[in-house]
Length: 287
Image (cartoon, rainbow, N blue to C red; front, side, top):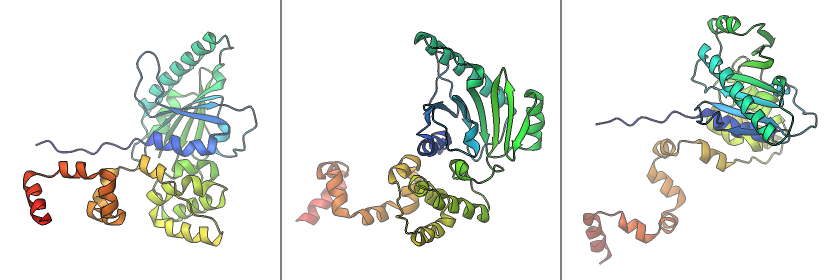
């Protein structure tokens, strides 16, 4: 008998969803980026500058260039040196493809400095940094948790999400990490203090940081904020089978209401799912 294996969570689409409200006035966030004739499966986001206006970012995202190839590793994935090789290979391929499109549209080609490559992972150890310094010339730490280098005039950024300071720009990264309680509270305060953040990130905060969610609710009431939960975000990013198994199907039906449940699925569909024995029992009960 084959054992059922849970599908690993794909974190980069969740990060894309978290980045879109924060960046949408200045950048377009794309996923499932193809290079060459066959797409290469990778945890890749492509951020494209869409506005000439100065951005308001003062933290991590102030370093974004015109085009940004961002490889995001989930919270349980360790930093790997081979990822750097693949990121640069992929980034150069994307830059080449973008310039092919530029030429087709009779536009000027993108300069290397306009396309940067980002590697974002939960934690980078000393061994990884030692290897990265051998592969990337002049790797410099420009602030705690953020390193910068160059490859063929393309900027390369390495981001240690766990070390990078909690600040408004970094909220999307920190929402996907479990950290000590004091840092969780710091994250909750950032979400409460920033305009629109509670609306944008409240659903994910309640899902992944339930240990501080009651404090968020209390702070929201104190500030007279309307506590909005984007249930669409939850539905898109929660493993519904696990969610239902945790709560229990019976409890969900009770909460929704049995009559509403039957009306929703339809009597014909309900009856079609009954076995002959169950149908016989139903007829006996209806007599």
